[in-house]
Length: 296
Image (cartoon, rainbow, N blue to C red; front, side):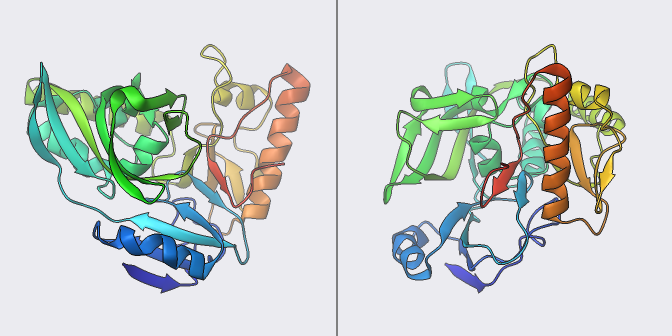
């Protein structure tokens, strides 16, 4: 287990903002899990499990957090079949683009809609990342997790998949995703690559994929009323405050223009939520994970 003192969240998140945590514990081997609970108690603070940091808005200043990063990067590898599905195992620390390249090279279809998502496998699983009609949970057949001090395999039937969320059974306790097994279908490789390219360029044309951003900042209140449309109609497309802005390309993307801060981001979000509530009577719920405390 590799440990770093006073890690910067600004250096570990795609939004490039946030203060310093107490420590960072990087899990490089499953044996590290045996020492994890004791080390967390010794360090104090609240554990924050994170991958590539692509869906996190971290507060400024000194944060009472211990970052736990599962850097388990074994795979992707084909491990068998289940009916018509080909099973692919991938460690939680594998970047999603790497998994998608593996799928395209091996003629495995199902995850094409997730192209352009910059996070890791573990983060995509926990957030049930989705795009172009594809949700991560729909293609999971099993997970290997660390929960309540025990490593166990969780079947697809035990997962509670929701909109940008995933839980295990009825338990509310924290868990760490160590690896995922995806069930994918065989298809022609050129077709898979074409769909991935099409989805990527479609996303690039409408979203600020190269900006410092945490992805969509709000969940869509309803299928026919996306958050971006509400923010646009409320006048927040391109609106700026203290180095932060709602993207002029897509209003539901909060971007750091270079010198932004969490205080500015939260103030801009609060202003947007109030405006949408007053004008449309609808509540915007953050999709981005705000740490260490939620938006008031």
